[in-house]
Image 1: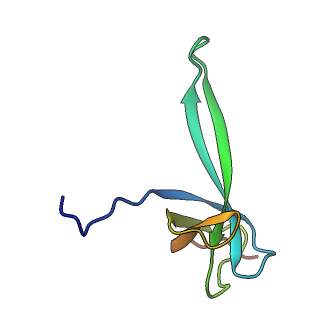
Image 2: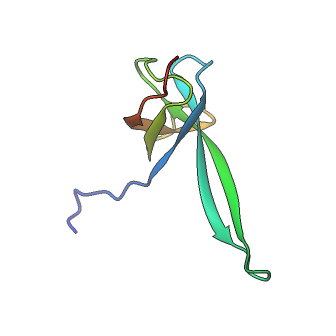
Length: 88
């Protein structure tokens, strides 16, 4: 790998809130096997991600990538919308 290429972490999750200006809250689920019992447990984390155009709505599935800090809690940027939420 050359010096120009950077490895950036990307995660996929569901948008649970878009009430803030240019910010969405993304719920990223993961499954972990309990070390002692062996049962598979569902865990999740919430990340604040930057949405420059305010075009993402609740329920959308998005891909976020780690970037430089934008604010105190926001260091992730929405890179693409994987799927839109169904509207009735």
